[in-house]
Image (cartoon, rainbow over all chains, first blue to last red; front, side):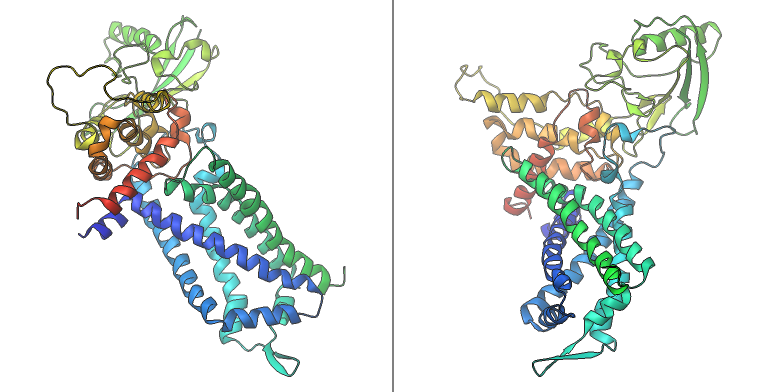
Length: 231
Length: 250
């Protein structure tokens, strides 16, 4: 085995893969939430449609998107490998265990939270990404230029209450996943320092576990209320 | 005090074990948890039954032998203490107390509450040492070490190898143990020459023994009788990644 495969198949190497892919996915969330803020613009979806056109035509974005798809798959597959290995490390379970006495719930349920998020990603990509790339999306024309009108797809999806509810629940799961995941990513890379760890923990808790999931959750709620004439 | 005990009984590593219930009267609240077990064993011997096998040695919190998983926690409800430092006053009259051995693939049960922790010895043998020439004693203070560094090394060196970190971890990971052993040598000048090989070899042996990976739940540090910090796990990660990227071991 070469030193590279030997490193990446060690328990620490596997955690590094989890960390790097996870932190990359975190960085994507910032871009995604910022772009989707166009939904709040109230211009009938023009700004949003122009943004989605940019996201599907810019060569740099397209390249990064393949890295993103790969990261999701690698992160989920590696999690499965690690979970199986970790379960195998304790073949006989305790008759009575009290883990809540020594560790937060989210830290012990990353696999469950991650599974919820993976199902969410499949559902989310089926509704929007798949429609945008392979479905039949109506066209809209702004200043003589044709755009795919993804905004109408968003409106149609978020006019259903159950769909909005699924999104809100999944964003709560995202918050719990990131409150542990973000800071753990840095711990795995050995980045732990009296000066910087408080900042990492603040970012992980406030920005990644609260603000970003909350903004994502507000989008379907806002669209639902708007489409149904409540606001 | 009256105590209901549920204790894991297992004849040897090849037979299946089961929980057995024992009732004890006249337990003093000032007894240590191990002394309570002594009382139980005397009673069992008088009845002609096999006493419960459990590990113990110093009974003053420094040997790390007394491995018991008590009411769902390594070394019981206290933090920063071993089982011998746990007293019956931590429990109430009439309590049911569940006592199990450490559970991990790398720590097979030998008998009752006794587990085989030689996996830790093999991890240390893999690299937890410094190769020094033993000649005449070196001059004191020949190598200057700042107080902060000395304290950091001593904090890690407090590890008594009891295995509570493995027992408490949901993944049965030995990361806190290995981190403490790597850390206390890595921060000192005497440990520097071999620090790359040490991290590589000790992590490889840790994986070989069948311990799980670290999920950073922090359970190990909470249950560690010496309260060893998660900072050392970050240092182990740094040492290991640095070694993998820069050592000449291909």
